[in-house]
Image 1 (tube, rainbow, N blue to C red):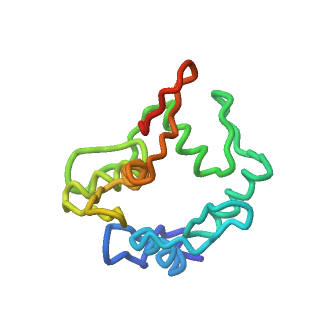
Image 2 (cartoon, helix red, strand yellow; image 1 turned 120 degrees about the vertical axis):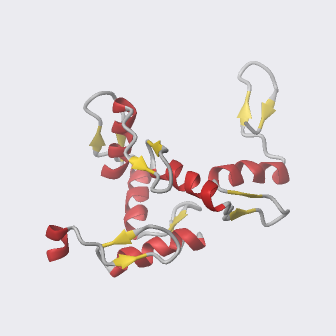
Image 3 (cartoon, helix red, strand yellow; image 1 turned 30 degrees about the horizontal axis):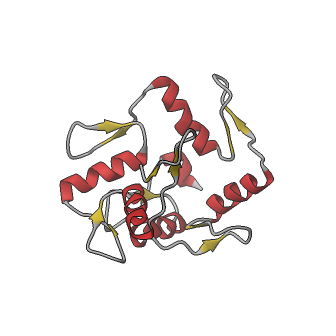
Length: 162
């Protein structure tokens, strides 16, 4: 409990700069490096690495969004998502790179940026040699293998992947 007051984070990741107060936080964090997602939704094919994420996801099935923005009509299932949304209103770049002067509005953008320093491309295609530093890029790339074109024109039959 005292760690809350001291701010000490003794549980450090050996693969990146993450540090946490509890060993359970570090265990959950390590899943981000392996892309392991042991929590599976019983109602759809969603999976995630943490129980808290699954609880928030389950609210989506109930269409409950208890966290509301006071500046616009945005509402979400988690307090952390609301905090991330509020940065859109302020434009504040609170996620700073420890290796250069770059800063970002989201932790995911900072994480992708950090890979530019290491050259690491942890998201790899299982069907070809494609690799990238962003999970979203891999998902988009996978459409080239499936042939799926999710973006459709509302006027004609044109469809595309981006």
